[in-house]
Length: 441
Image (tube, rainbow, N blue to C red; front, side, top):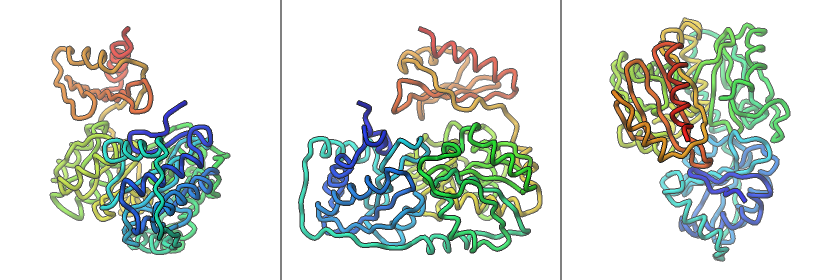
């Protein structure tokens, strides 16, 4: 049976892989590992069909271990992050499977000090306790309830600073973001939101709530053109990722959005540090340097990015997957905050397509998954002639006119390839060469 314990969270098919019994044991194990007896711990959920059942079981496990659970209801993952800080709890958990298809359920756990719990930072210990059914029972556990959505919306709305009115189409993908906009939109003067698929529905009847897949964006693109909107935005199921299309409906890759947001931040804080994940286009560090900022490359995954932001004093970080992290949002990511700051940037004068045009300097393959043996692949890559090799995350090769990064998947027997070149022809040529090298028997 597939393992629901991943590198960064817990995720699996409901109820065959992740069910109420396991959720109870995970909740109880979380309380044991984090020492939550007598302490307050925040729990929320997204709109998935399995959410209420998994949440109830997870909370019961916490309460039986003596934890005081603060139930914040149905919110986006960033809103739960806000709740942890706003309510001063000892971390918290979100019941979500993020952008996965509707049959999946999941749990994301944050520990005391708001540090993410992953495979190398406590999740393995929680898994061990849960699998061995080592249940702790303490008195004093109980459930409190708190409403934070209005406070979160007020916090976000204060970030809006439009120079002209805007009209933006938002594809909620039937995820949680439609619920968030019900509270937020009335607080956004000058910003007209055209809603698309705002009804929260964990069955995802219109398309999967994954904005990185182009097949999920045609309705948004068509509506942007039909409404003559300034831009379009799409969110994932739990609302922590945001992707953009311009006023013509053209898709803007998330690394270029990182460069746009870096420009916004560096215009307000000259010389600041901006972090970016190593799969991003070379234009990102180039643009940061052109703006007088300091660019810092980081490994993929929120835990590494957050740690890099803290150690380097970064004001902002962006990830190719559409996660954007903000120093002034507890070093965490928020799709809605990214959305509002991008609206500010668009309102300054130029159309979004004009803002992005200077950033389209290179040709990126996008992420490709290839079945291969990691160790054999890395050995062949290290033998490439005239290549500069970096092993910050997986293996990155840099050659004249192109570069590629190859990383092993944490969940599948595949490697993930990202490649960029200075021309479309060279990109396609090197992509095919790398595909053959990686899949070589």
